[in-house]
Amino acid sequence: MKHPKEIAMPSAQSDRFVHDRLPPAEQWPALRFDRPELQLPAQVNAVQALFERAFAAGHAERPLFRSDERTLSYAQAQAEVNRIANVLTVELGLVPGNRVLLRGGNSVAMALAWLGTVQAGLVAVASMPLLRAKELGAIIAKAQPSVALCDVKLQGELKAALAADPHASGIPLLAFNTGGADAPPHSLEAMAQRQSERGTPCPAAHTDIALLAFTSGTTGTPKAAVHTHGDVLAACETWPRHVLRATPDDIVVGSPPLAFTFGLGGLLVFPMWAGASVYFPSIPYTPEAMVQLIGRVGATICYTAPTFYRQMAAFAQQHGIGHLRLSVSAGEGLPDATRQLWKDATGLEMLDGIGATEMFHIFISSPPEAVRRGAIGQVVPGYEARVVDDDGQPLPLGEVGKLAVIGPTGCKYLDDPRQANYVKNGWNYPGDAFRQDADGYFFYQARTDDMIITAGYNVAGPEVEAALLQHPAVAECGVVGKPDEQRGQIVMAYVVLKPGEAADASQVKALQDHVKHNMAPYKYPREVVFVTQLPRTETGKLQRFALRQQATQTS
Image (cartoon, rainbow, N blue to C red; front, side):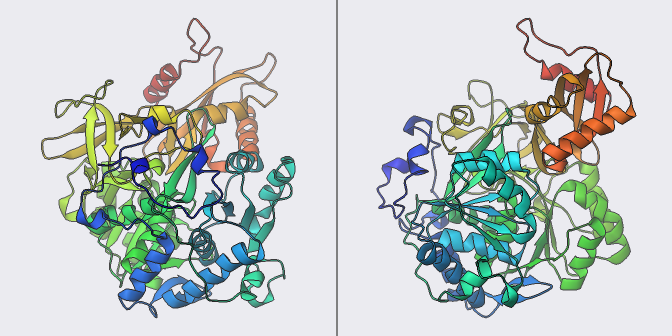
Protein backbone atom coordinates (compact mmCIF):
# COMPACT_ATOMS: atom_id res chain seq x y z
CA MET A 1 0.00 0.00 0.00
CA LYS A 2 1.41 3.40 -0.92
CA HIS A 3 0.22 6.86 -0.23
CA PRO A 4 -0.32 8.51 -3.64
CA LYS A 5 1.84 11.48 -2.70
CA GLU A 6 4.78 9.12 -2.19
CA ILE A 7 4.70 8.14 -5.88
CA ALA A 8 6.74 10.59 -7.95
CA MET A 9 5.07 11.27 -11.30
CA PRO A 10 5.57 14.27 -13.58
CA SER A 11 2.25 16.07 -13.98
CA ALA A 12 1.07 17.41 -17.33
CA GLN A 13 -1.45 19.78 -15.72
CA SER A 14 0.01 23.28 -15.66
CA ASP A 15 -3.18 24.66 -14.13
CA ARG A 16 -2.77 23.51 -10.53
CA PHE A 17 -6.17 24.74 -9.29
CA VAL A 18 -7.45 21.27 -8.33
CA HIS A 19 -4.10 19.85 -7.26
CA ASP A 20 -3.59 22.79 -4.90
CA ARG A 21 -7.00 22.24 -3.31
CA LEU A 22 -6.67 18.54 -2.55
CA PRO A 23 -6.89 17.44 1.09
CA PRO A 24 -3.83 17.65 3.34
CA ALA A 25 -1.64 14.55 3.20
CA GLU A 26 -2.82 13.19 6.55
CA GLN A 27 -6.44 13.12 5.31
CA TRP A 28 -5.80 11.21 2.09
CA PRO A 29 -7.22 7.72 1.67
CA ALA A 30 -4.71 4.91 1.57
CA LEU A 31 -4.75 3.36 -1.90
CA ARG A 32 -4.10 -0.29 -2.62
CA PHE A 33 -2.86 -1.66 -5.93
CA ASP A 34 -2.00 -5.16 -4.74
CA ARG A 35 -3.48 -7.14 -7.64
CA PRO A 36 -1.65 -7.72 -10.94
CA GLU A 37 -4.36 -6.00 -13.00
CA LEU A 38 -4.03 -2.85 -10.87
CA GLN A 39 -0.39 -2.25 -11.77
CA LEU A 40 -1.09 0.78 -13.95
CA PRO A 41 1.68 2.78 -15.67
CA ALA A 42 2.86 6.01 -14.06
CA GLN A 43 1.99 7.98 -17.20
CA VAL A 44 -1.47 7.19 -18.55
CA ASN A 45 -4.28 9.18 -20.14
CA ALA A 46 -7.49 7.32 -19.32
CA VAL A 47 -9.27 8.10 -22.60
CA GLN A 48 -6.23 7.28 -24.71
CA ALA A 49 -5.82 3.99 -22.79
CA LEU A 50 -9.45 3.01 -23.39
CA PHE A 51 -9.23 3.63 -27.15
CA GLU A 52 -5.86 1.88 -27.43
CA ARG A 53 -7.23 -1.14 -25.57
CA ALA A 54 -10.13 -1.34 -28.05
CA PHE A 55 -7.88 -0.98 -31.09
CA ALA A 56 -5.41 -3.57 -29.79
CA ALA A 57 -8.30 -6.04 -29.47
CA GLY A 58 -9.35 -5.41 -33.07
CA HIS A 59 -12.46 -3.33 -32.26
CA ALA A 60 -11.67 -0.22 -34.33
CA GLU A 61 -14.57 -0.80 -36.74
CA ARG A 62 -16.99 -2.19 -34.15
CA PRO A 63 -19.76 0.16 -32.97
CA LEU A 64 -19.13 2.15 -29.80
CA PHE A 65 -22.02 4.64 -29.75
CA ARG A 66 -25.47 3.94 -31.15
CA SER A 67 -28.57 6.13 -31.25
CA ASP A 68 -31.70 6.52 -33.33
CA GLU A 69 -29.83 9.04 -35.51
CA ARG A 70 -26.32 7.61 -35.91
CA THR A 71 -23.81 4.91 -35.08
CA LEU A 72 -20.12 5.60 -34.48
CA SER A 73 -17.42 2.97 -34.53
CA TYR A 74 -14.52 3.17 -32.11
CA ALA A 75 -12.37 4.70 -34.84
CA GLN A 76 -15.04 7.23 -35.81
CA ALA A 77 -15.63 8.13 -32.17
CA GLN A 78 -11.91 8.70 -31.62
CA ALA A 79 -11.82 11.07 -34.62
CA GLU A 80 -14.70 13.08 -33.11
CA VAL A 81 -13.01 13.10 -29.71
CA ASN A 82 -9.81 14.40 -31.32
CA ARG A 83 -11.75 17.20 -33.00
CA ILE A 84 -13.36 18.26 -29.70
CA ALA A 85 -10.04 18.12 -27.85
CA ASN A 86 -8.56 20.33 -30.59
CA VAL A 87 -11.41 22.85 -30.20
CA LEU A 88 -10.71 23.12 -26.50
CA THR A 89 -6.94 23.36 -26.70
CA VAL A 90 -6.11 24.79 -30.14
CA GLU A 91 -9.05 27.12 -30.77
CA LEU A 92 -9.97 28.08 -27.20
CA GLY A 93 -6.44 27.86 -25.83
CA LEU A 94 -7.25 25.87 -22.71
CA VAL A 95 -4.32 24.30 -20.86
CA PRO A 96 -4.19 20.99 -18.97
CA GLY A 97 -5.88 21.29 -15.60
CA ASN A 98 -8.48 23.86 -16.70
CA ARG A 99 -12.02 22.81 -15.78
CA VAL A 100 -14.75 22.26 -18.37
CA LEU A 101 -18.38 22.35 -17.23
CA LEU A 102 -20.51 19.77 -19.06
CA ARG A 103 -24.30 19.94 -19.05
CA GLY A 104 -26.46 17.51 -20.95
CA GLY A 105 -28.57 14.42 -20.82
CA ASN A 106 -27.33 11.04 -22.00
CA SER A 107 -26.45 11.33 -25.67
CA VAL A 108 -23.66 10.54 -28.10
CA ALA A 109 -22.72 14.23 -28.11
CA MET A 110 -22.47 14.38 -24.31
CA ALA A 111 -20.29 11.26 -24.23
CA LEU A 112 -17.98 12.66 -26.93
CA ALA A 113 -17.69 15.97 -25.07
CA TRP A 114 -16.65 14.17 -21.87
CA LEU A 115 -14.07 12.05 -23.69
CA GLY A 116 -12.66 15.04 -25.58
CA THR A 117 -12.32 17.02 -22.38
CA VAL A 118 -10.46 14.32 -20.48
CA GLN A 119 -8.27 13.31 -23.42
CA ALA A 120 -7.10 16.94 -23.63
CA GLY A 121 -5.87 16.79 -20.02
CA LEU A 122 -8.72 19.04 -18.88
CA VAL A 123 -10.94 18.34 -15.89
CA ALA A 124 -14.52 17.28 -16.72
CA VAL A 125 -17.16 18.78 -14.42
CA ALA A 126 -20.43 17.14 -15.45
CA SER A 127 -23.67 18.52 -14.00
CA MET A 128 -27.09 16.94 -13.72
CA PRO A 129 -29.47 18.06 -16.48
CA LEU A 130 -32.27 18.77 -13.98
CA LEU A 131 -30.28 21.25 -11.87
CA ARG A 132 -31.56 24.82 -11.61
CA ALA A 133 -29.55 28.02 -11.91
CA LYS A 134 -28.89 28.34 -8.17
CA GLU A 135 -27.54 24.78 -7.96
CA LEU A 136 -25.43 25.25 -11.08
CA GLY A 137 -24.12 28.48 -9.61
CA ALA A 138 -22.76 26.63 -6.59
CA ILE A 139 -20.93 24.18 -8.86
CA ILE A 140 -19.52 27.01 -10.98
CA ALA A 141 -18.30 28.88 -7.89
CA LYS A 142 -16.60 25.75 -6.57
CA ALA A 143 -15.05 24.43 -9.80
CA GLN A 144 -14.32 27.76 -11.53
CA PRO A 145 -14.57 26.35 -15.07
CA SER A 146 -12.87 27.99 -18.04
CA VAL A 147 -15.56 26.99 -20.54
CA ALA A 148 -19.01 25.39 -20.53
CA LEU A 149 -20.28 22.79 -23.02
CA CYS A 150 -24.07 22.50 -22.91
CA ASP A 151 -26.83 20.68 -24.73
CA VAL A 152 -28.68 23.30 -26.76
CA LYS A 153 -31.98 22.40 -25.02
CA LEU A 154 -30.55 23.00 -21.55
CA GLN A 155 -28.92 26.40 -21.93
CA GLY A 156 -31.53 28.45 -20.06
CA GLU A 157 -30.64 27.62 -16.47
CA LEU A 158 -26.91 27.61 -17.23
CA LYS A 159 -27.04 31.04 -18.84
CA ALA A 160 -28.91 32.32 -15.78
CA ALA A 161 -26.28 30.83 -13.48
CA LEU A 162 -23.40 32.35 -15.46
CA ALA A 163 -25.09 35.76 -15.57
CA ALA A 164 -25.67 35.73 -11.81
CA ASP A 165 -21.97 35.31 -11.02
CA PRO A 166 -19.84 38.33 -12.01
CA HIS A 167 -16.74 36.11 -12.05
CA ALA A 168 -18.39 33.63 -14.44
CA SER A 169 -20.23 35.92 -16.84
CA GLY A 170 -17.36 35.83 -19.35
CA ILE A 171 -17.08 32.04 -19.50
CA PRO A 172 -17.59 30.87 -23.13
CA LEU A 173 -20.66 28.64 -23.60
CA LEU A 174 -20.58 26.23 -26.52
CA ALA A 175 -23.81 24.41 -27.36
CA PHE A 176 -23.93 20.85 -28.69
CA ASN A 177 -26.69 18.69 -30.18
CA THR A 178 -27.41 21.67 -32.43
CA GLY A 179 -28.15 19.88 -35.69
CA GLY A 180 -25.07 18.29 -37.24
CA ALA A 181 -24.28 19.77 -40.68
CA ASP A 182 -26.68 22.67 -40.07
CA ALA A 183 -25.14 23.53 -36.68
CA PRO A 184 -24.61 27.25 -35.92
CA PRO A 185 -20.99 28.38 -36.53
CA HIS A 186 -20.22 28.87 -32.84
CA SER A 187 -21.65 25.51 -31.72
CA LEU A 188 -19.34 22.76 -30.53
CA GLU A 189 -20.20 20.59 -33.54
CA ALA A 190 -19.45 23.32 -36.09
CA MET A 191 -16.20 24.27 -34.40
CA ALA A 192 -15.18 20.61 -34.20
CA GLN A 193 -15.75 20.10 -37.92
CA ARG A 194 -13.20 22.85 -38.60
CA GLN A 195 -10.58 20.94 -36.62
CA SER A 196 -8.38 18.02 -37.61
CA GLU A 197 -9.58 14.53 -36.78
CA ARG A 198 -6.05 13.79 -35.63
CA GLY A 199 -4.91 14.68 -32.15
CA THR A 200 -2.29 14.03 -29.54
CA PRO A 201 -3.74 13.03 -26.16
CA CYS A 202 -2.32 14.94 -23.21
CA PRO A 203 0.47 12.83 -21.61
CA ALA A 204 -1.25 12.69 -18.24
CA ALA A 205 0.24 11.29 -15.08
CA HIS A 206 -1.61 8.55 -13.20
CA THR A 207 -2.32 11.14 -10.50
CA ASP A 208 -3.50 13.93 -12.82
CA ILE A 209 -7.12 14.96 -12.39
CA ALA A 210 -9.70 13.64 -14.87
CA LEU A 211 -12.98 14.78 -13.32
CA LEU A 212 -14.80 16.49 -10.49
CA ALA A 213 -17.98 14.64 -9.51
CA PHE A 214 -20.38 16.76 -7.49
CA THR A 215 -22.57 15.28 -4.81
CA SER A 216 -24.78 16.98 -2.20
CA GLY A 217 -23.76 16.67 1.41
CA THR A 218 -26.02 16.71 4.42
CA THR A 219 -25.68 20.48 4.67
CA GLY A 220 -26.78 20.92 1.08
CA THR A 221 -23.43 22.49 0.14
CA PRO A 222 -22.08 20.67 -2.91
CA LYS A 223 -19.03 18.48 -2.42
CA ALA A 224 -16.71 17.83 -5.34
CA ALA A 225 -15.13 14.37 -5.38
CA VAL A 226 -11.85 14.44 -7.27
CA HIS A 227 -10.91 11.50 -9.49
CA THR A 228 -7.70 10.95 -11.41
CA HIS A 229 -6.92 9.21 -14.68
CA GLY A 230 -5.64 6.34 -12.56
CA ASP A 231 -8.90 6.17 -10.61
CA VAL A 232 -10.91 5.77 -13.82
CA LEU A 233 -8.75 2.91 -15.08
CA ALA A 234 -8.43 1.22 -11.68
CA ALA A 235 -12.22 1.20 -11.43
CA CYS A 236 -12.33 -0.67 -14.76
CA GLU A 237 -10.11 -3.39 -13.32
CA THR A 238 -12.33 -4.11 -10.30
CA TRP A 239 -16.13 -4.46 -10.58
CA PRO A 240 -16.31 -4.61 -14.41
CA ARG A 241 -13.57 -7.25 -14.62
CA HIS A 242 -14.64 -9.48 -11.75
CA VAL A 243 -18.42 -9.03 -11.43
CA LEU A 244 -19.99 -7.47 -14.55
CA ARG A 245 -17.78 -9.32 -17.04
CA ALA A 246 -19.12 -7.54 -20.14
CA THR A 247 -18.03 -8.67 -23.61
CA PRO A 248 -17.48 -6.92 -26.96
CA ASP A 249 -20.85 -8.30 -28.12
CA ASP A 250 -22.77 -6.50 -25.38
CA ILE A 251 -25.09 -3.58 -26.11
CA VAL A 252 -25.63 -1.43 -23.03
CA VAL A 253 -28.64 0.76 -22.17
CA GLY A 254 -29.62 2.54 -18.99
CA SER A 255 -31.06 5.56 -17.26
CA PRO A 256 -28.36 6.89 -14.85
CA PRO A 257 -27.08 10.27 -16.07
CA LEU A 258 -23.51 10.49 -17.28
CA ALA A 259 -23.14 13.25 -14.67
CA PHE A 260 -23.35 10.51 -11.99
CA THR A 261 -20.29 8.31 -11.66
CA PHE A 262 -22.71 5.35 -11.69
CA GLY A 263 -23.86 6.41 -15.16
CA LEU A 264 -20.41 7.51 -16.30
CA GLY A 265 -18.96 4.11 -15.49
CA GLY A 266 -21.87 1.96 -16.61
CA LEU A 267 -22.77 3.83 -19.79
CA LEU A 268 -19.41 5.06 -21.03
CA VAL A 269 -16.15 4.03 -19.39
CA PHE A 270 -16.89 0.37 -18.64
CA PRO A 271 -18.39 -0.46 -22.06
CA MET A 272 -15.31 1.07 -23.71
CA TRP A 273 -13.03 -1.03 -21.49
CA ALA A 274 -14.92 -4.15 -22.60
CA GLY A 275 -15.05 -3.21 -26.29
CA ALA A 276 -18.86 -3.12 -26.06
CA SER A 277 -21.31 -0.51 -27.37
CA VAL A 278 -23.84 1.86 -25.78
CA TYR A 279 -27.27 2.84 -27.09
CA PHE A 280 -28.46 6.35 -26.24
CA PRO A 281 -32.17 6.90 -27.03
CA SER A 282 -33.40 10.21 -28.39
CA ILE A 283 -36.40 10.40 -26.04
CA PRO A 284 -36.58 10.23 -22.23
CA TYR A 285 -37.06 6.81 -20.71
CA THR A 286 -40.33 5.54 -19.32
CA PRO A 287 -40.54 2.02 -17.88
CA GLU A 288 -42.41 0.74 -20.94
CA ALA A 289 -40.13 2.59 -23.36
CA MET A 290 -37.07 1.08 -21.67
CA VAL A 291 -38.43 -2.45 -22.08
CA GLN A 292 -39.37 -1.80 -25.70
CA LEU A 293 -35.93 -0.33 -26.44
CA ILE A 294 -34.22 -3.38 -24.92
CA GLY A 295 -36.08 -5.58 -27.37
CA ARG A 296 -35.76 -3.26 -30.38
CA VAL A 297 -31.98 -2.72 -30.22
CA GLY A 298 -31.01 -6.10 -28.81
CA ALA A 299 -29.67 -4.69 -25.54
CA THR A 300 -27.88 -7.21 -23.35
CA ILE A 301 -27.01 -5.08 -20.26
CA CYS A 302 -29.32 -2.60 -18.54
CA TYR A 303 -28.52 -0.13 -15.74
CA THR A 304 -31.24 1.54 -13.73
CA ALA A 305 -32.54 2.04 -10.20
CA PRO A 306 -34.74 -0.45 -8.30
CA THR A 307 -37.76 1.84 -8.60
CA PHE A 308 -37.53 1.68 -12.39
CA TYR A 309 -37.09 -2.10 -12.45
CA ARG A 310 -40.20 -2.46 -10.32
CA GLN A 311 -42.18 -0.37 -12.80
CA MET A 312 -40.62 -2.20 -15.77
CA ALA A 313 -41.54 -5.69 -14.51
CA ALA A 314 -45.10 -5.74 -15.85
CA PHE A 315 -43.98 -4.48 -19.27
CA ALA A 316 -41.14 -7.02 -19.35
CA GLN A 317 -43.66 -9.77 -18.72
CA GLN A 318 -45.88 -8.36 -21.46
CA HIS A 319 -43.27 -7.61 -24.16
CA GLY A 320 -40.38 -9.87 -23.18
CA ILE A 321 -36.78 -8.75 -22.70
CA GLY A 322 -35.17 -9.92 -25.93
CA HIS A 323 -31.48 -10.71 -25.47
CA LEU A 324 -31.06 -8.99 -22.10
CA ARG A 325 -28.71 -11.02 -19.91
CA LEU A 326 -27.64 -8.62 -17.13
CA SER A 327 -29.78 -6.15 -15.19
CA VAL A 328 -27.68 -3.97 -12.90
CA SER A 329 -29.26 -2.19 -9.95
CA ALA A 330 -27.56 0.51 -7.90
CA GLY A 331 -28.06 4.06 -6.71
CA GLU A 332 -30.36 3.05 -3.83
CA GLY A 333 -31.14 0.03 -1.70
CA LEU A 334 -32.65 -2.87 -3.64
CA PRO A 335 -35.70 -4.28 -1.79
CA ASP A 336 -35.86 -8.04 -1.99
CA ALA A 337 -39.47 -7.76 -3.14
CA THR A 338 -38.30 -5.81 -6.19
CA ARG A 339 -35.56 -8.34 -6.91
CA GLN A 340 -38.06 -11.21 -6.80
CA LEU A 341 -40.67 -9.32 -8.85
CA TRP A 342 -38.09 -8.72 -11.61
CA LYS A 343 -36.88 -12.31 -11.45
CA ASP A 344 -40.44 -13.65 -11.73
CA ALA A 345 -41.10 -11.39 -14.74
CA THR A 346 -37.83 -11.99 -16.60
CA GLY A 347 -36.05 -15.02 -15.17
CA LEU A 348 -33.01 -12.78 -14.49
CA GLU A 349 -31.31 -12.46 -11.13
CA MET A 350 -30.64 -8.78 -10.42
CA LEU A 351 -26.99 -7.74 -10.15
CA ASP A 352 -26.96 -5.45 -7.12
CA GLY A 353 -24.14 -3.27 -5.85
CA ILE A 354 -23.20 -0.39 -3.62
CA GLY A 355 -20.73 2.27 -4.59
CA ALA A 356 -20.13 5.94 -3.94
CA THR A 357 -19.33 9.03 -5.96
CA GLU A 358 -16.31 9.43 -3.69
CA MET A 359 -15.06 5.93 -4.64
CA PHE A 360 -16.06 6.37 -8.32
CA HIS A 361 -18.14 3.19 -8.57
CA ILE A 362 -19.24 -0.13 -7.05
CA PHE A 363 -17.11 -1.83 -4.38
CA ILE A 364 -19.56 -4.39 -2.92
CA SER A 365 -21.44 -6.65 -5.35
CA SER A 366 -21.84 -10.26 -6.45
CA PRO A 367 -22.50 -11.72 -9.89
CA PRO A 368 -25.96 -13.24 -10.45
CA GLU A 369 -24.78 -16.82 -9.81
CA ALA A 370 -23.43 -15.82 -6.37
CA VAL A 371 -26.39 -13.77 -5.10
CA ARG A 372 -27.52 -14.28 -1.53
CA ARG A 373 -31.07 -13.19 -0.81
CA GLY A 374 -31.26 -9.93 1.14
CA ALA A 375 -27.55 -9.18 0.70
CA ILE A 376 -25.97 -6.61 -1.61
CA GLY A 377 -23.06 -8.97 -2.18
CA GLN A 378 -19.43 -9.57 -1.27
CA VAL A 379 -16.54 -7.16 -1.49
CA VAL A 380 -15.29 -6.65 -5.05
CA PRO A 381 -11.75 -7.97 -5.71
CA GLY A 382 -9.33 -5.08 -5.33
CA TYR A 383 -11.21 -3.64 -2.35
CA GLU A 384 -11.46 -4.52 1.33
CA ALA A 385 -14.53 -3.70 3.40
CA ARG A 386 -15.23 -3.93 7.12
CA VAL A 387 -18.09 -3.28 9.51
CA VAL A 388 -16.63 -1.20 12.34
CA ASP A 389 -17.61 0.61 15.51
CA ASP A 390 -17.34 4.35 16.18
CA ASP A 391 -13.60 3.95 16.85
CA GLY A 392 -12.96 2.15 13.57
CA GLN A 393 -12.51 -1.26 15.20
CA PRO A 394 -13.97 -4.29 13.37
CA LEU A 395 -17.20 -5.59 14.87
CA PRO A 396 -18.08 -9.28 15.29
CA LEU A 397 -19.88 -10.87 12.35
CA GLY A 398 -23.62 -10.19 12.41
CA GLU A 399 -23.39 -6.92 14.34
CA VAL A 400 -24.52 -3.66 12.73
CA GLY A 401 -21.93 -0.93 12.37
CA LYS A 402 -20.38 1.56 9.98
CA LEU A 403 -19.04 0.46 6.63
CA ALA A 404 -15.34 1.19 6.03
CA VAL A 405 -13.72 0.58 2.63
CA ILE A 406 -10.23 0.69 1.20
CA GLY A 407 -8.97 -0.04 -2.32
CA PRO A 408 -7.44 1.43 -5.49
CA THR A 409 -9.83 4.42 -5.42
CA GLY A 410 -10.78 6.67 -2.53
CA CYS A 411 -12.31 9.94 -1.44
CA LYS A 412 -10.50 13.17 -2.25
CA TYR A 413 -12.79 16.17 -1.82
CA LEU A 414 -11.92 19.48 -3.42
CA ASP A 415 -11.15 22.01 -0.69
CA ASP A 416 -13.71 20.66 1.81
CA PRO A 417 -13.40 20.16 5.58
CA ARG A 418 -15.78 17.18 5.32
CA GLN A 419 -12.83 15.15 4.01
CA ALA A 420 -11.97 14.40 7.64
CA ASN A 421 -15.41 12.83 8.12
CA TYR A 422 -15.16 10.59 5.08
CA VAL A 423 -11.56 9.36 5.43
CA LYS A 424 -10.23 8.19 8.78
CA ASN A 425 -6.87 6.46 9.18
CA GLY A 426 -6.80 5.85 5.43
CA TRP A 427 -10.21 4.13 5.33
CA ASN A 428 -13.24 5.52 3.48
CA TYR A 429 -16.54 5.81 5.36
CA PRO A 430 -19.37 6.08 2.80
CA GLY A 431 -21.96 6.79 5.51
CA ASP A 432 -23.81 3.46 5.46
CA ALA A 433 -24.69 1.03 8.21
CA PHE A 434 -24.14 -2.67 7.39
CA ARG A 435 -23.79 -6.09 8.90
CA GLN A 436 -21.65 -8.92 7.49
CA ASP A 437 -22.22 -12.66 7.64
CA ALA A 438 -19.70 -15.47 7.99
CA ASP A 439 -19.42 -15.91 4.21
CA GLY A 440 -18.49 -12.30 3.62
CA TYR A 441 -21.88 -11.10 2.37
CA PHE A 442 -22.81 -7.54 3.31
CA PHE A 443 -26.37 -6.60 4.30
CA TYR A 444 -27.36 -2.95 4.00
CA GLN A 445 -29.19 -1.46 7.01
CA ALA A 446 -29.51 2.31 6.57
CA ARG A 447 -27.75 5.60 5.87
CA THR A 448 -25.81 7.03 8.77
CA ASP A 449 -26.32 10.67 7.80
CA ASP A 450 -29.14 12.94 6.70
CA MET A 451 -28.96 12.01 3.02
CA ILE A 452 -32.22 10.88 1.45
CA ILE A 453 -31.89 8.40 -1.43
CA THR A 454 -35.08 8.43 -3.47
CA ALA A 455 -35.42 6.46 -6.71
CA GLY A 456 -31.64 6.54 -7.14
CA TYR A 457 -31.23 10.29 -6.53
CA ASN A 458 -29.37 11.75 -3.56
CA VAL A 459 -31.24 14.56 -1.83
CA ALA A 460 -29.89 16.49 1.16
CA GLY A 461 -32.66 17.25 3.67
CA PRO A 462 -31.20 20.62 4.75
CA GLU A 463 -31.06 21.74 1.12
CA VAL A 464 -34.81 21.18 0.72
CA GLU A 465 -35.41 22.90 4.07
CA ALA A 466 -33.57 25.97 2.80
CA ALA A 467 -35.85 26.11 -0.25
CA LEU A 468 -39.03 25.69 1.81
CA LEU A 469 -37.97 28.42 4.20
CA GLN A 470 -37.95 30.86 1.30
CA HIS A 471 -41.73 30.46 0.94
CA PRO A 472 -43.61 33.27 2.71
CA ALA A 473 -46.00 30.84 4.46
CA VAL A 474 -43.27 28.76 6.16
CA ALA A 475 -42.04 29.53 9.64
CA GLU A 476 -39.98 26.40 10.31
CA CYS A 477 -39.44 23.06 8.64
CA GLY A 478 -37.57 19.79 8.85
CA VAL A 479 -37.01 17.40 5.94
CA VAL A 480 -36.22 13.70 6.23
CA GLY A 481 -36.54 10.50 4.24
CA LYS A 482 -39.59 8.32 4.72
CA PRO A 483 -39.35 4.61 3.83
CA ASP A 484 -41.25 3.82 0.65
CA GLU A 485 -41.66 0.48 -1.08
CA GLN A 486 -41.63 1.93 -4.57
CA ARG A 487 -38.86 4.56 -4.33
CA GLY A 488 -36.80 3.29 -1.40
CA GLN A 489 -37.39 6.61 0.34
CA ILE A 490 -39.43 9.70 -0.39
CA VAL A 491 -38.71 13.27 0.65
CA MET A 492 -40.99 14.18 3.56
CA ALA A 493 -41.33 17.68 5.01
CA TYR A 494 -42.60 18.65 8.46
CA VAL A 495 -43.69 22.28 8.25
CA VAL A 496 -44.66 24.88 10.83
CA LEU A 497 -46.72 27.57 9.10
CA LYS A 498 -46.80 31.24 9.96
CA PRO A 499 -49.92 32.50 11.80
CA GLY A 500 -52.96 32.85 9.58
CA GLU A 501 -51.70 30.43 6.89
CA ALA A 502 -54.05 27.59 5.94
CA ALA A 503 -52.82 24.03 6.54
CA ASP A 504 -54.71 22.48 3.64
CA ALA A 505 -54.17 20.62 0.39
CA SER A 506 -53.73 23.80 -1.65
CA GLN A 507 -50.94 24.86 0.70
CA VAL A 508 -49.24 21.50 0.23
CA LYS A 509 -49.31 21.94 -3.53
CA ALA A 510 -48.04 25.51 -3.25
CA LEU A 511 -45.04 24.39 -1.21
CA GLN A 512 -44.30 21.49 -3.55
CA ASP A 513 -44.48 23.75 -6.61
CA HIS A 514 -42.21 26.27 -4.87
CA VAL A 515 -39.51 23.63 -4.34
CA LYS A 516 -39.85 22.33 -7.90
CA HIS A 517 -39.38 25.86 -9.22
CA ASN A 518 -36.23 26.52 -7.20
CA MET A 519 -34.53 23.12 -7.25
CA ALA A 520 -34.24 20.00 -9.37
CA PRO A 521 -37.82 18.62 -9.45
CA TYR A 522 -36.91 15.23 -7.97
CA LYS A 523 -36.04 16.99 -4.68
CA TYR A 524 -39.56 18.19 -3.92
CA PRO A 525 -41.31 16.77 -0.81
CA ARG A 526 -43.84 14.15 -1.88
CA GLU A 527 -45.43 14.38 1.53
CA VAL A 528 -45.92 17.50 3.61
CA VAL A 529 -47.10 17.29 7.22
CA PHE A 530 -48.13 20.45 9.05
CA VAL A 531 -47.10 20.55 12.72
CA THR A 532 -47.25 23.17 15.47
CA GLN A 533 -43.60 22.72 16.50
CA LEU A 534 -40.47 20.79 15.59
CA PRO A 535 -38.38 18.68 17.96
CA ARG A 536 -35.27 20.60 18.99
CA THR A 537 -32.47 20.33 21.51
CA GLU A 538 -32.11 22.76 24.37
CA THR A 539 -29.71 24.77 22.25
CA GLY A 540 -32.24 24.96 19.42
CA LYS A 541 -30.79 22.36 17.03
CA LEU A 542 -33.32 20.44 14.97
CA GLN A 543 -33.55 16.76 15.95
CA ARG A 544 -33.89 15.12 12.58
CA PHE A 545 -33.61 11.67 14.10
CA ALA A 546 -36.92 12.30 15.90
CA LEU A 547 -38.54 13.31 12.61
CA ARG A 548 -37.16 10.18 10.94
CA GLN A 549 -38.69 8.08 13.69
CA GLN A 550 -42.06 9.76 13.12
CA ALA A 551 -41.79 9.25 9.36
CA THR A 552 -40.96 5.56 9.83
CA GLN A 553 -43.94 5.06 12.12
CA THR A 554 -46.32 6.49 9.52
CA SER A 555 -44.97 4.42 6.62
